[in-house]
Image 1 (cartoon, rainbow, N blue to C red):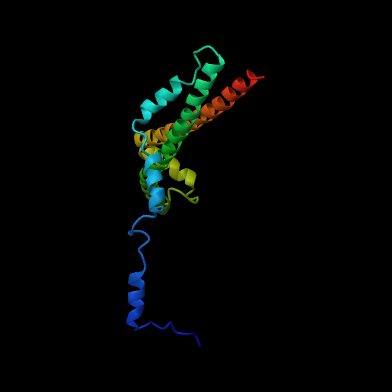
Image 2 (image 1 turned 90 degrees about the horizontal axis):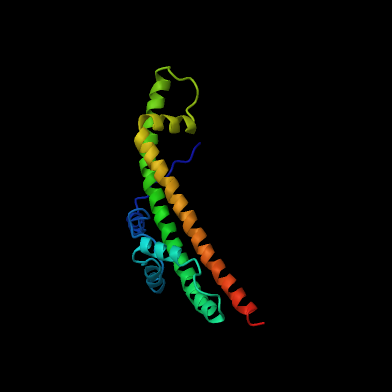
Length: 187
């Protein structure tokens, strides 16, 4: 004999459920107030393009490699390494935002493509199981311009992120190199 599931008539059950936060429509997760201020400072970089241009142009040393020039270049390089990393983490967040938006667009295309493939299968025009590759190919056929554009933009966003990571790494390496050159001159 099976056990019947008992439905609670206790009104406190509904109150308990209503007191639980709504994880989807409730407030988004956040860090504590002191760290929120740091987040705001880290992610307030003004004009990212101007910062990128400045960091790229200042990567080359153009002065004579005297101890004074090396010390000045090291001081600047350490600040530029910090700025380059700040630019990178900002780009990482922007890239993630782009990925979410691209997933929505590509997901809608895939959904339509899946429906089309299922109709073909139901009509007997297709006998094999629908694969992810089939869905991608069908979406590309149904939406050639949008599919190409969104995937190209995705590739460029990822390329930009890789390039900014490399720029931050180059500035970090510049700090080590200048420090080594400065210390070698003191021997």
